Length: 284
Image 1 (cartoon, rainbow, N blue to C red):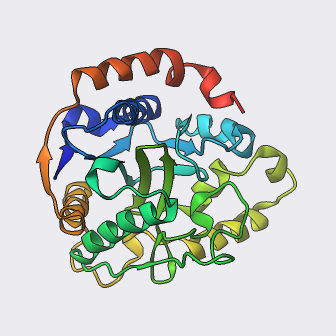
Image 2 (cartoon, rainbow, N blue to C red):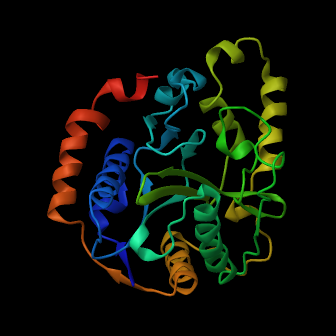
Image 3 (cartoon, one colour):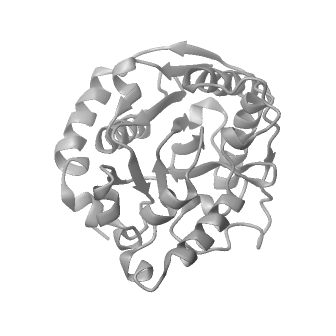
């Protein structure tokens, strides 16, 4: 088995609509395939402008859209679940795994586990010692809030007891897509203000905003917060380390290979019919 690594620079930095459309397009092509050439596709990217992505089942009203726009950021609904993530000074990964890989399971948690083990392996090579949040009922997200990083969920990676890598998944009959984010540094107040609706903020003074921002800081960990790293990795080194983690855990070689013509056609279609339209963000 070989892992396809999409590392074309033109896809490494795009806006939220284009990043989500490309992941969706590849996912759809995998779903339609009985045995793709590469049973696993991995890619790493960032957003320009910075973007709040929010889960497929999440309501846009849980976000502070006015503040997001005032900051020059954008917002975009994902096809994966989970809660809102501000992509700002971060690395985002997407991995698509087909059943022909041998790493696709009916249990969503088993899918999470194998991806998480690859992430942990990659982080360890950078002297970032992580652990998995328990997959025990009652030990997952307890906040119920809109912000992904205000608490860890099942089998997400923690460092120093705090959430280090958020994850969200979409699983169909023969493959799954998983998104995840690692922060190089994090401004908790910025995150809190982007992902707290105006109807809530209007009852809060500056001290209350600071208090809830501090709570977010206490629950999340960025690379800048990890003290035992001799040299903080940049985007390229972090992506390379995670890729190596996947090769070791999945027992497969990573091969740089382009997006296919069929995937590009699906990508163009999705930009026209879904991600490039305002309806996609407001459909729920």
